[in-house]
Length: 512
Image 1 (cartoon, one colour):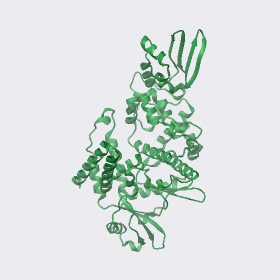
Image 2 (tube, one colour; image 1 turned 60 degrees about the vertical axis):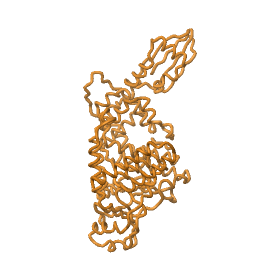
Image 3 (cartoon, helix red, strand yellow; image 1 turned 180 degrees about the vertical axis):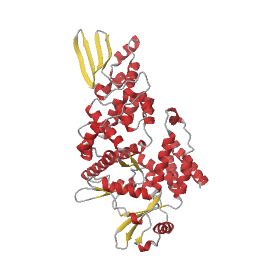
Image 4 (cartoon, rainbow, N blue to C red; image 1 turned 180 degrees about the horizontal axis):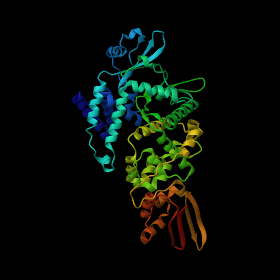
C-alpha cells in the first residue's frame, strides 16, 4: 500500500508541476484535467489537495472535485454498511440509492428508513484508512527546507496537525459527535444542521437526516435579498463558532453546504464535520479582546494578545513595533461601523508593504492549528465575494456573541510576558499615532496643511513631491529609506519624521 501510494503521489506531483509550467490557457486546461483525474482516482489526502485548489481557483477544472468525482458502485459499499450494522441493511432501510458523487474519504447514499423517513448514509471507502496512513508516512518524510527552515516554522507541529485532522476525519464517530455539538450549540437564524442517528452509525458509517437543496455555484444568481440572508447566515455561523462555542468548521468547500428557498428567507444547511478546529475559551477571548482593543485604540498591547492566542513571543519581537498597525490591517472589517467592502481589504498587499520578508516571522509565530482557522475565514470571504454581498461585520459580530461575551473579553487579564531582549519595547494601541501631518510654509505663511491616516507614512516616498524627494536624497541629510525602516520596525508612534527647508519653503512632516 505504501509503495502504491508513493507511486500515485509521484504522478500527482509531476502533473502539478506541468500545470504550474503551462505556457498558455489550452495547455494549462489539458494539464489541469489530467491532474484532476489523478486526484479523483487517488482520493484520500490527494483529493483533499484538489479540493483546496477548487477553493482557491473557483470555477476551474478543480471544481469538479467538489461535486462530480465518480462514486464507487453500491455493491462495493453495501458490505461495509452491513458489517457496521451487524445485520442486513434491509432490516433498517427500505431502500438505498447508488451515490451520485464522492468525497475524499467516503461517499453519501440517499436512503429511507422502513417508516419512510428520508436519510443520508455516509460510508467510508474500503481500505481508505490504510491509504491515508500510507500518505501520512510520506508526509512525515517531508524535509524542513526553504521558508519553513529559514523562518523557524515548527514543521513537526504542522505534520501533527495534519495527522490529527485526518485521523479524526477517518473516524465517523468523531464526526457524529461534532455534528451533534454544532446542532445543539451553534444557534444561528436560518442555519440547519442534520440530525445524527448514532444508533446506526460507527467509525466507518454515519447515518443522518437527509439534507436537500442546491450547492453554492447555483445560488450566485439568486435575488440579492436571498444572497444577503445567506451571507449573513454564513458570517454569523463563523462568528458564533469562533467566539462562543470554540468549535469551528474548517472545511469550507462547496460540497459541504446546501441552500434552500424558504418563505421567511433562504436556509443554509451545513454538512461534513470531519474537519474542525477547537479554540479554547482563553484563546477566543484573547482574539476578541484584540479586535476590541484595535477598535477602541485602548491601552492594550497587541503583543500580549497574540501571545495569549498562542503566538511565539520570541518570534514576535522581530516585528513588535508593527503589531498595532498589523492588527489594524488584519481586523479591518471589524473596525468600521458600516458595511465593509471586501475589495478594500487588500490584506496581503498591506502586510507585505508593512513587513516585507519579515511577514514570515508573523506566520511562523502562529500555532499550527491556526492555519485551519485561517482556512475557515478565507473560505468565507471567498464565498462573500462570489455572492457579491458586503456586510457590516461589527454589527453581525455583536449580534452573534452578545454583550456578555464582549464584556468577558474586555475584562480578560493577559499574562505577563518576559522576553530576553534588551531593546524590547512594545507599543499599545493608545500609543500609536492616529494621523500623519504635512505642513508647508513660505516666509512663515502657510501654503499646505493636511492630515492623513497614520499608515500613509509607510508610503512616504510616493506622496512627497518628486523634486523635494530628489533634493532630500542629494543633500543626504534625511534618509527616507531609513525612516521607513524605522517606522516598520518600531511602529507608528507619535514623532517628527523630518523638518527641513528647500527653495524658501519649509517642510515639516510628523505623526501625532
